[in-house]
Structures are given as C-alpha cells and as structure tokens.
Image (cartoon, rainbow over all chains, first blue to last red):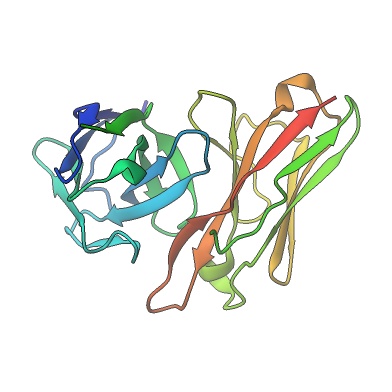
Length: 121
Length: 113
C-alpha cells in the first residue's frame, strides 16, 4: 500500500525558510510512472498546486513561487522535499505531498495526510 | 485567482442530481486538456473521484460521472446522498504547452439539503 507522509516544522517565522519532507512507502520515488508533487491549502481556501519533482531531479514550480521554491528528491531515503524561502503569513497553509501520474498529469492518486505550517513570529 | 472557474456553491436534495462545471480547460487537446476531479470533506485529505475527464478510480461510486465539452468539464453526482456533502475541485493543465502547469479550480461547496 502506497503511503506518503509529510514532516517538518509546524511553525515558521516570517522571512525564514519552510522546509518539508515527504517520505514515501510502498512505491519508489525512482519510479518512472509517477512524479512527486506539492499542493497547499490556506485555511478556509482552495487547493493550490505548487510544483513537482521527477526522479531525475527535474522540477517545476508555479511562477508565483518559483523564485522562492526549491524541490529535491532523495532516492536512497525514498523521499522528496520542499523548501520555500522568505515566507510570509500568506504562506500559512496545509501542505500536502502527493503522487502524480506521469501520463495523466492531473491525476494525484496518493496523498499525504497534510501538515499545517503556520508562519508567525 | 484560478485559471479554472467553478461555481462557489451548489445544492440539492437527497436523491436528486447536481452538476458542477469547470470552465477554462485548455483547448490544446490531448494530455493538456485532461481533467480530474477531487472530493474533500472538511478536515480531510482530497480524494480523487474522476480522472481523464470521466474515468472512475476503483472504489468510487458510479453515481459520480464526468464529461467535457470544449473548454468546460462537468461533474455530475446522481442520487445525492448526505455523505456527498463536501468541497469538489477540478484540476487540469493551464497555460501554454511550454510554460503551463497544473491548476485547481477554486472549488465548489456542495450542500445536501
């Protein structure tokens, strides 16, 4: 059974860096059938796709976050990570990691439980 | 503001059918215009209920169906049940083939009266 689990600080100070890791079990981040993605949801608001990383290390993030986002994949540990720099209160959200289908890009079939990250001093 | 537009809310009585629209789907065709739909109950993780416009993952009720016409996709829920009350999001590709990315619609809150 494929499972994803996010981990990282639940509280980050403004201007600092948000760092999250998604541990994958039951599948390999090296699988060519999938890509690994981050999605966030501010409290009371809708879902926002942040970006993805592929097994090769190729990554993409949405233009509004691109200058602040770094994504990486750690094959030996079977996990992938998100770093978001210079955070503000607007980055407060539940952050989900999810598995995306390489052929059907909008198909996210496995999700982590989500982790709430609050940006506050 | 999302590139995919959904109604903010819809409602229906038990047993009825409702349809949620999602406009702004890419007209490029192929993988660029495929749509998935997600159901999210309060405080819960989003759940995939439809992909490739109209396909259902294993275990999803056949009361959920999807369609697409041009740049508008639709999710229909028939035989409404209380448990269907949730937020629903469409997801697809937005932007140009060279610089686009995945995007979710703004979400639709379904109330079962």
